[in-house]
Image (cartoon, rainbow, N blue to C red; front, side, top):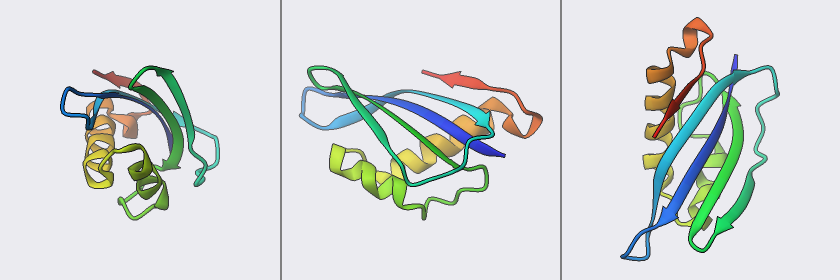
Length: 97
Protein backbone atom coordinates (compact mmCIF):
# COMPACT_ATOMS: atom_id res chain seq x y z
CA UNK A 1 0.00 0.00 0.00
CA UNK A 2 1.27 3.46 -0.88
CA UNK A 3 0.10 6.62 0.83
CA UNK A 4 -0.96 9.85 -0.87
CA UNK A 5 -0.41 13.01 1.17
CA UNK A 6 -1.82 16.49 0.84
CA UNK A 7 -0.03 18.96 3.10
CA UNK A 8 -0.95 22.60 3.63
CA UNK A 9 1.65 24.97 5.05
CA UNK A 10 1.48 28.66 5.91
CA UNK A 11 4.12 31.27 6.56
CA UNK A 12 3.93 32.39 10.18
CA UNK A 13 4.70 35.84 11.63
CA UNK A 14 8.40 34.92 11.95
CA UNK A 15 8.60 34.18 8.24
CA UNK A 16 9.02 30.42 8.64
CA UNK A 17 6.58 27.87 7.25
CA UNK A 18 4.55 25.61 9.45
CA UNK A 19 2.32 22.67 8.62
CA UNK A 20 -1.33 23.51 9.25
CA UNK A 21 -3.00 20.37 7.93
CA UNK A 22 -2.19 16.93 6.57
CA UNK A 23 -4.53 14.59 4.75
CA UNK A 24 -3.48 11.05 3.88
CA UNK A 25 -5.16 8.19 2.12
CA UNK A 26 -4.09 4.78 0.89
CA UNK A 27 -3.62 4.74 -2.85
CA UNK A 28 -2.84 2.39 -5.69
CA UNK A 29 -0.79 5.17 -7.33
CA UNK A 30 2.89 4.44 -7.62
CA UNK A 31 5.16 6.05 -5.06
CA UNK A 32 7.47 8.53 -6.74
CA UNK A 33 9.73 11.49 -6.19
CA UNK A 34 7.20 13.77 -7.89
CA UNK A 35 6.08 16.72 -5.83
CA UNK A 36 3.13 18.89 -6.74
CA UNK A 37 3.37 22.33 -5.13
CA UNK A 38 0.71 24.97 -5.50
CA UNK A 39 0.65 28.42 -3.96
CA UNK A 40 -2.89 28.89 -2.67
CA UNK A 41 -2.38 32.51 -1.62
CA UNK A 42 0.24 34.77 -0.14
CA UNK A 43 2.35 32.55 2.12
CA UNK A 44 0.08 29.50 1.85
CA UNK A 45 1.14 26.40 -0.06
CA UNK A 46 -0.36 22.99 -0.77
CA UNK A 47 1.88 20.01 -1.48
CA UNK A 48 0.86 16.62 -2.84
CA UNK A 49 3.02 13.51 -3.07
CA UNK A 50 2.88 9.70 -2.84
CA UNK A 51 5.28 7.61 -0.75
CA UNK A 52 5.47 3.90 0.05
CA UNK A 53 3.47 2.90 3.13
CA UNK A 54 6.74 1.76 4.67
CA UNK A 55 8.50 5.10 4.18
CA UNK A 56 11.28 5.85 6.65
CA UNK A 57 12.09 9.49 5.98
CA UNK A 58 15.07 8.79 3.76
CA UNK A 59 13.00 9.38 0.62
CA UNK A 60 14.23 12.39 -1.31
CA UNK A 61 10.71 13.85 -1.45
CA UNK A 62 11.22 15.08 2.13
CA UNK A 63 14.42 16.88 1.12
CA UNK A 64 12.65 18.47 -1.86
CA UNK A 65 10.21 20.14 0.51
CA UNK A 66 13.05 21.94 2.27
CA UNK A 67 13.26 24.35 -0.69
CA UNK A 68 9.79 25.50 0.39
CA UNK A 69 10.93 26.14 3.96
CA UNK A 70 9.63 22.92 5.49
CA UNK A 71 11.87 20.85 7.74
CA UNK A 72 12.14 17.35 6.24
CA UNK A 73 12.42 15.62 9.61
CA UNK A 74 9.39 17.44 11.03
CA UNK A 75 7.39 16.69 7.90
CA UNK A 76 8.35 13.03 7.97
CA UNK A 77 7.25 12.76 11.61
CA UNK A 78 3.98 14.59 10.87
CA UNK A 79 3.30 12.18 8.01
CA UNK A 80 4.06 9.16 10.19
CA UNK A 81 1.72 10.54 12.86
CA UNK A 82 -1.01 11.07 10.27
CA UNK A 83 -0.67 7.45 9.15
CA UNK A 84 -0.88 6.21 12.75
CA UNK A 85 -3.91 8.40 13.45
CA UNK A 86 -5.56 7.22 10.24
CA UNK A 87 -5.17 3.54 11.04
CA UNK A 88 -4.19 3.04 7.41
CA UNK A 89 -3.13 -0.52 8.07
CA UNK A 90 -6.89 -1.11 8.18
CA UNK A 91 -7.38 0.67 4.85
CA UNK A 92 -9.02 3.77 6.32
CA UNK A 93 -8.35 7.35 5.25
CA UNK A 94 -7.92 10.29 7.61
CA UNK A 95 -7.47 14.00 7.96
CA UNK A 96 -5.40 15.77 10.55
CA UNK A 97 -5.65 19.51 11.12
